[in-house]
Image (tube, rainbow, N blue to C red; front, side, top):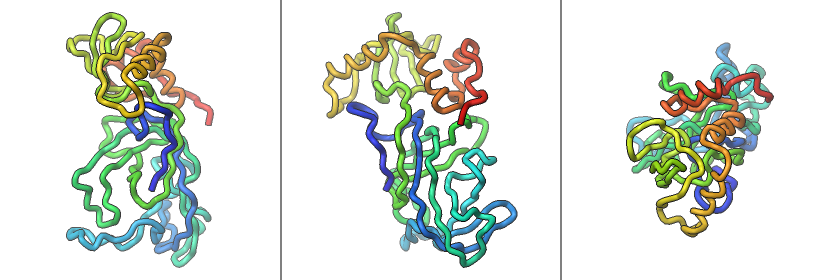
Length: 271
């Protein structure tokens, strides 16, 4: 099961869209089911998961393909790496597979009720999709990023680096300094109650309503929002995320306006 170091008291003890985290997985012994192929892939007997005997449409054979590149930005390669490297592996070899500490950002969190049937156990009830730092989400692409079930048997760890708007939680209703009311559904998803533009709140913010949160009192939550937004701005908060994720935020009317002022976030970022 995955582990997530707490983001601190209050909302946000679970992964959500926009989180910048450092993902890792201890290297674990695995058997090579099919040696390296010219496309860079190698097939392993997966040291985690087990076949789902009650899945009628798919019988998992216990193997997983690892498309091991030389780094997380290697042309869309996955995050898992082998030791030795894939090109040194032949069928029947023993290797280790895992994820070296890698900076990523969360682009999607999906929940399933009932859990999905994948042919493997445990059946996922949620999936977290991440992209390596330096790669931006592109809405034109059907598939991107790598998905993880935080509740399955792979011992993946997510170490928090940055959460934009960490002082808010989805569903919060706030008022900005111009008197406009907003619902916060995520750092890229602000819904003004008046339906008008511009589509970004003007700091400082005042918390109007929040669903019950056992970790923080209403007064404490209000003080946290007021204190966090006393200085700065929405655009500075997004720029802070861009610097950490080394990526541009997803496109929206709000962020198109932000890019016109701030310019593109991508650039020659340090590793």
